[in-house]
Amino acid sequence: MSVRIFVTGNPGVGKTTLVLKISEALRDKGIKVGGFTTREVRERGRRVGFKIKALDTGEEGTLAWAGLDGPRVGKYGVNLQDLNEIGVEAVERALREADVVIIDEIGAMEFKSKKFAEAVEKAIESEKPLLAALHRRWVDRFKDRGKLYVLTVENREKVREEILLELLKELKGI
Ligand SMILES: Nc1ncnc2c1ncn2[C@@H]1O[C@H](COP(=O)(O)OP(=O)(O)OP(=O)(O)O)[C@@H](O)[C@H]1O
View 1 (spheres, protein in one colour):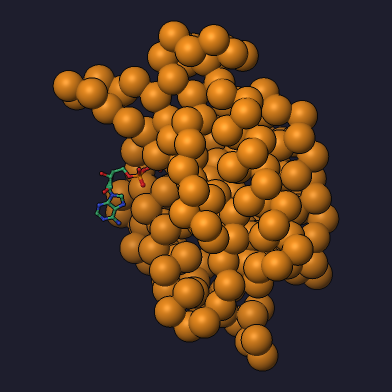
View 2 (tube, protein in one colour):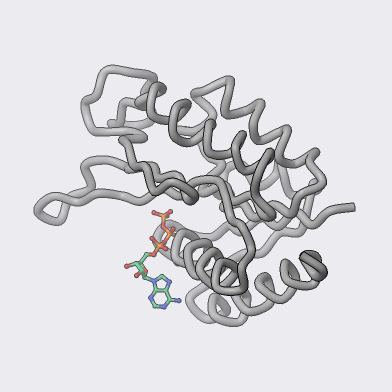
């Protein structure tokens, strides 16, 4: 059975940073990483939206923006087009072409897309190693389908090393 690693934790604890550093470390070893990351965008100190970026191509779009017309999560409207065309496509590509699949994150915004939900399911069922950031509210739904790490400021460096070793062990031979 393949490794499936979920990382959760409070907002801003470092989930995206962990995923990015692990992606870099894997790439440095010649391992092909695919999937997507998200990041928040602030203007004058206030959060105004979220960007979504494909790990393989670097293509970036808008995941959600305050006041945007689209399915709503809080004050943000979700941009289904970029979520599907950048995020979901990146996961599909990773499932075909990459050695490791990264999903950052599984949460309310992302689940506004049925295609995203299907891609997550495929990624979990896949034989390829999966590393996914999981929003706190979705932990109960996914915690039995892989290994769950709860990230804190205190443990985040150690957890990062542990996950990297776990993935490398699984990828031995590539
Ligand atoms: N290991 C670390 N060492 C130092 N700073 C860190 C570390 N991890 C994260 N940070 C800093 O903390 C901030 C938030 O990190 P990050 O965006 O990775 O968190 P997150 O958990 O993904 O947030 P969100 O809840 O928005 O998804 C960033 O400014 C980042 O640079």
